[in-house]
Image 1: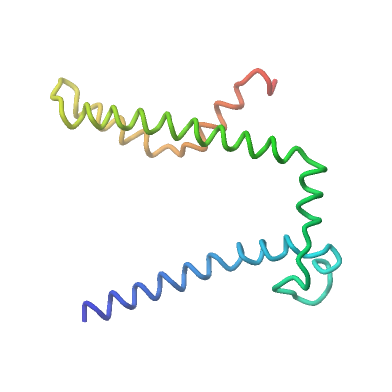
Image 2: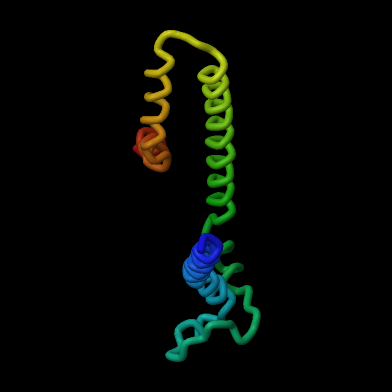
Length: 131
């Protein structure tokens, strides 16, 4: 009974994963189609030919490389700060006993409930370059 339940759960999770991946794979497929193939009335799941013109146009008409670099810098920077902060806090909370340790732990857990994306957006809004 327990094994059947586990197999059923795994099959359900696999089916859910496939359902989530289908739109992503379709978007990737459409990105390699020619514009007239995308806008045709018939539904095409796979491109007839491998077309890189959409990617070339995206890089030529926008500053996509700058956007990618900005995303990379923000990701590496925030991940580094989080790892250092979380590592030192975890070390202090697990190996040292001090007054206010429980309150500090609850404060850390409470701040984890705030989505980090919200903090990034609010910080960027305050930068002088957006004024």
